Length: 91
Image 1 (cartoon, one colour):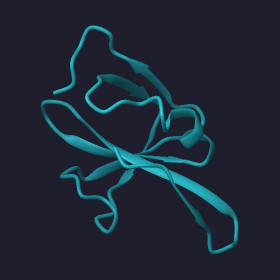
Image 2 (cartoon, rainbow, N blue to C red):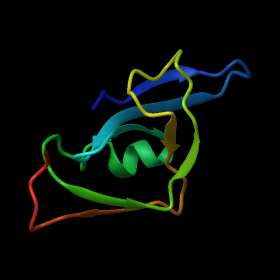
Image 3 (cartoon, one colour):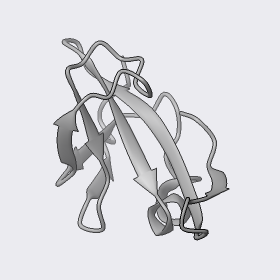
């Protein structure tokens, strides 16, 4: 998990972003959170904990910004759901 960082877009808007890598026994994938989702999830997602994510948007991985082995990456949108798995440990 990388820390939340702020920057100005080319249009001059203040933006925030953070990303993390999720994995299971078969693969890993990058998940990127933008703006208000940084505020919502930036501090609450803990490294080493197990989560279930749904309703993220999958796109082909951009190797310029993605160091996972996956061919895809996920962008979190406002309808994403993230739930802690109480009965599991992260791999």
